Image 1: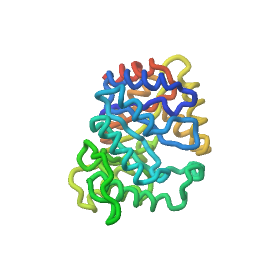
Image 2: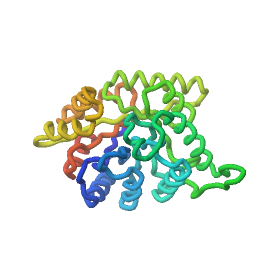
Image 3: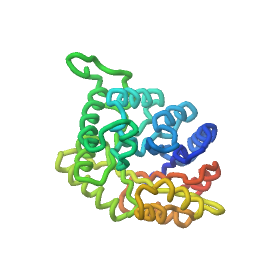
Image 4: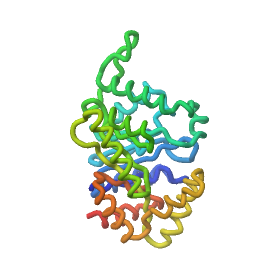
Length: 287
């Protein structure tokens, strides 16, 4: 299993210079990808803007949205933005997409919360058409630029519903799990594999997960404070996320082993402490 690291771009008050320094340092480490979380009604940096910014100061590490809330975006513009970022980064974009569960994000966009699944299905069809270089319609020609990766950026889809599992099988390269529970992550992935087989896709879907970490003096308190605030909208369920976070080297190693044991391909560790030493602390446990 490969290990990836998130940008601290969702932590309120993080200066832009730290984002650049973090990306440069992560690029020299053992990490496969550098990730960002999508959210609208929150003082975070917008996902594609953040990745476009750090694409210019990195050379090796992949750039991942985990996950971008696609229905908040205009479909044609999103397809062009993703293709542009893939081209500008030399084909390093992994586009993790989902629909989210916070209605206030949809009110702010604005977009229709109740039809977000249907909107997402329409977007996936349109984006695949754009990335393949086809005209958009009889009246509208192709939208460029051409992405570096054939057929478009690597696409991962998240979600917990049967509809989400079907989308993974139809449109994407794999499944992005946000489950804190190892068993729930495995159950969802097995459901994805069933849909994958039903659609007669070759090979197996990629299996990517996310978790949180913070290491060093006072890590437990700092991680708890950040996650309790960020996931306050989930009520008591936020406690599961807090409890699953890694705040010691031993917990990081255990988390890596447990998810590797269920066949996960890539695990992305989201930082809860916006300090550069966190990169080396995690990297030392990955080697």
